[in-house]
Length: 209
Image (tube, rainbow, N blue to C red; front, side, top):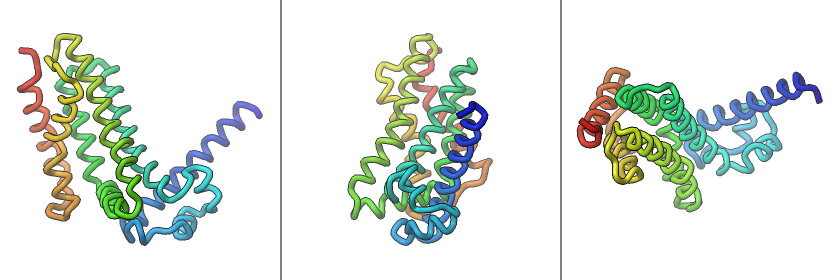
């Protein structure tokens, strides 16, 4: 197969995969996890069940992929900010705003709610969500804090603990409140203010004077 044909096929496969994930997320928002079945996904994404099995294995695999894509995107963004040689303050501001924007999106909140709801029936979903979501993001943060400590910019003795602390400052109250319906999705200005406040609190503790 020529390179051009191979790229075209890869592009079509990616488009189909994205269409299936988008349809799944939309249906979970509308119907919840239990109310979303493969027939509905196929109809919404204009695909066959064979395609779903090929890309994701089953419905649980779809939920895992939705979570993994979000976590991977955040991890890659942090890595990109590091490679761009941004100072630590700017990198964390950008990362924190991006994280809050993505994780407080209604689709992501619906996916978290679906995972919590389905975990009673499918216990492995909770473990998978935690591994491909929070743990992946914490690992990327820990690596970043370790690099900044080696550079003499931060003073972090335990990068993994610092990553958990930063995620807690940024996400714990805001995400939990939205998951349980106590608060609605914030406007852009509120997201930026909350993200910046979390970064300032973190840097006040860990940045080398």
